[in-house]
Length: 355
Image (tube, rainbow, N blue to C red; front, side, top):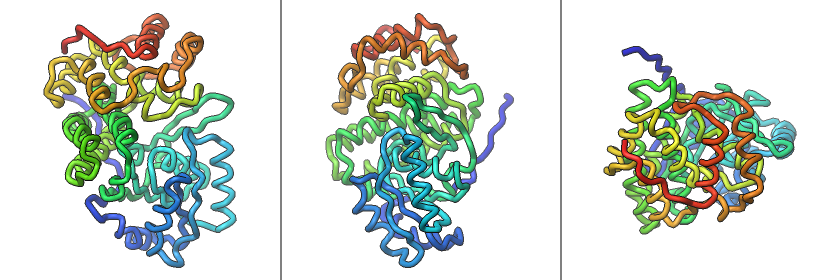
C-alpha cells in the first residue's frame, strides 16, 4: 500500500447552536474588522449571526451571486478595502463561500465559513470565477477557510427543493473522492461515511424539514464530503458541472444532481471498487441507478432540459469538456461525453450497471 495524505489545517466547530461561537473564533484569529458576506436572501440571517461581534463587525455585504462573476468579486473586494477589513465571515451556501474564496484569493485575508447548505465547498481549496461565459477553477490554500462553523439550526429554513440538490452536490464530492487518482485510505473512509450519512438523512430532511437530528446528520455528511474532496483531485463530474454552470448559467446544485448518476455510470467500468463502496454505503446493488433514484425520491430535477439547458448547446458543451486535461478513471472521449450529456439532457435512468 502506497499513498500520500495531507491533513487540512481547518478548525471545525460542529453542533446545534455553534454559530454563537463566532465571536470567540473571530477573537481567536486576532481579527478586528470582519466583513460578513451573504446572498440577498440571507441578509437578515447574516445580520443576526454577526450581531454579537460588535465593533469587530465591519458590516454585511449581501450581494453574493451564483458562479461568482469576476465583476461581482471585484465589487466585493472594493467594498472590503473601503471598510478596511481584515477578514471575511461567509454565511450561506456555495455562492457566498465562493465569493469569499475569490476575495481571499485576491487579498490573502482569512475566511470563517458558516455554511447553511450541504455543498461542502467550505472544506476545499478550490475556487471558481466566471467571465465571458466560462468558469475558471483552481486550487489555492489561501482560499480554504481557517474556521468552519457547522450549525444545523441554521439549515432548518433550507427548503426541501434546495436541500435535496444541495445534498446530492455533497454526495458528488464523496463519489469523486473515492475514485480520485490521489485518494488515500483516509479520504476513502471519509467519503464512504459521507455517502452513508447523506443517503440516509436527505430523504428525511426533505420529508420532515423540522427534523433537527437528520439535519445534523446531513450536515455531518456534507462536512465529510467537503473534507474528502478537499484532500483529493476532482475529475469529470466536477469539470462538467463547473462548465455547464459557468457557460450556460445553470443552477449549481441542480447540475450536480443531474450529472452525478451519468458520470458514475461512465466511470463504473474503470472504477469498480469505488462504485462498489458507494453501493455498499447506500445499501444497493447498482450505484449509478441508485443515485438517480435518490434524486427522484427527493423531488429533485433529473434532466438538464428541465433546468434551462438547450439541446442545440450539447455539442458545444462536449467540446468545452475536452478543452483541458484532468484526471479521471475512464478515458475521456468526445463521443462518450456527448452521449453522457444527451442522457443527462433527457433524464434517462442509468441501467444495467452492476459494480
